Length: 304
Image 1: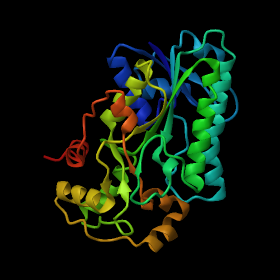
Image 2 (image 1 turned 120 degrees about the horizontal axis):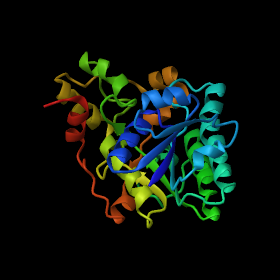
Image 3 (image 1 turned 120 degrees about the vertical axis):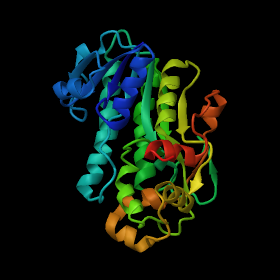
């Protein structure tokens, strides 16, 4: 299969390009800086320039494309000023609309679009077990993900199978979610965030890559798919597991008010409780490489 990846130079994009290439697929990249993309991701067979919020991808990028993966989006980490929120929104929703508009203009359309999505869809849901059929929560993040998925789903009337992968807290070597936390944990300053009782749906990079490959290759998979391990954990247990691996205590709490003061709206990403279950992936017969947290963390952190 010849696959077009929008956002091929990001953390998941680089790893997915390597994974697809190793499986015998050809990967074409879309990037604002195509020369840099070709250097950063040498496995790409071609790289094309694209300003995702401004226009459709160039016509030449679509030659022979059978599947599309959309990973474009401004990182949500950081304080959410009005400008930051607009950038987070536009680089997802407008970019996805432009991508679908590009597909609409094709005579020979790709069979599948696999669009990035996020567990932020569910919002703060306490102890409730959440599956793909549950409605979105309330607030900026759920509204963002709802609109993001709707933009991707607009490709379905064009005859394109659409899969939306709602990715959980991503564990992997140098993962953007995990890496910034490690200096504090290694100093013994890690611990519960807020109460620590909130559910954290985590997933290892190997399984994210496996689910992207499955979504591309399995014609029976469509709609939302929770890309989360089958065993979500409470945040305090996540912190304790990291502490055990680095050999340091992980008991120092970070109060909710302090997190909200420092992080603003982004604090919801770590304080919201989302007990997300991977029902669709399991129904499709996907077998997770990592079903338990500690082995996943040990692989990611190089622990024994």
